[in-house]
Length: 500
Image (cartoon, rainbow, N blue to C red):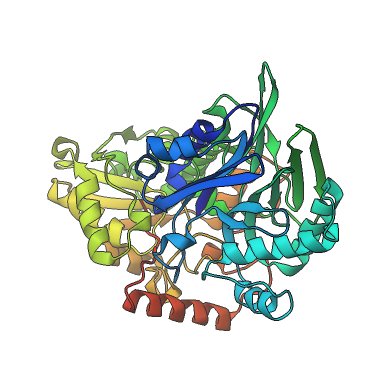
């Protein structure tokens, strides 16, 4: 998972992109990068680390120009720890393009081979994002016939990308002396939105993964980029858009964005993330009422932070007491992106501490956004018991995670998921809980549909194993598992998912 932003401004954009990346930091903490365009030149700086650590005053001064883009990144399975795979990426032909990407291509290996054999393009990393950039660059060269570039040629190139690339991708590209381009995969799996703000010099435009990057920097959310759509914002400020995907495809945004990844103050595909999590809590409350004896529950507690709205709404809906029993240390990174199990355990203990008086002698219902490996859940249950809880029940605002996500959220292989081969009672025993309640998938999707009835389908593959792009089979998942295993044994950092 990554966060991306691009700006076409009327004044230098380096600080604006930096501020936007801070607002998107939750989407990636492994690396950060910014590239700006000025007088037919690009300036770029990228490195491992948080945004605040990557950019110094000297770096910012070097990022001149009124347009640019940036990314915060966490790596997917098997990816290199080298900064070469941090974004933005750049190619000098045709025209000169900088490029950021959120998502994951499922056919990037085949595309890389095709680029080498047929398009005569060489790839320098194992990043699917570099592959996608070169596919786009090749198709842009074909569409423009090596001549003058215009919006129609960009739209033709994006149509060709949609025909060749499979998987999830939201993209922002900056083309030298032309403008900013944003486009989204035909299913709309990964988010991308458009914002605008007025200045004395004229309108400025921003493309970003989440609306919080817009509103937090003074832009107004105009709309989401439609699935399969491309938007061109020229240096002159002209905005053109075209639906470049084949008709008939159904928008299927990723449900895990709403469960966990997105910030609660974002609006995504017309749905407030905060409202979505409140709705999830209501549906989960009904399931808890059917599964547990409410008289056995003294208090409801969230696992900070993303489960808090669901926990509050669950407690209110059932008339149960709500308390904050865990305090979060905000200076420890998310366990979702920790590279190893030992590090992950240590991080949980550093990140959360229990308020003993809230647990002592009580039957507590802990609410989390999801359970992936179960490592964090087990540690938290143990912490609650150590703080004096009499009984510990557990509720997940998401259904059981039983399958890998191949569209940009780097979850463990299927054998590493705690729900693999276990029913709910067995999972409860594994994490040490006296009872466990999972959200129902139909209820999760309905909680989102309640807020935007236009969304009739969702990408929920990690829950139901149904991959919307139609190219994922057992052989693909087996190869993914082997790739992760080789990367882990060789010492390359991978980012196994875990609930936060």
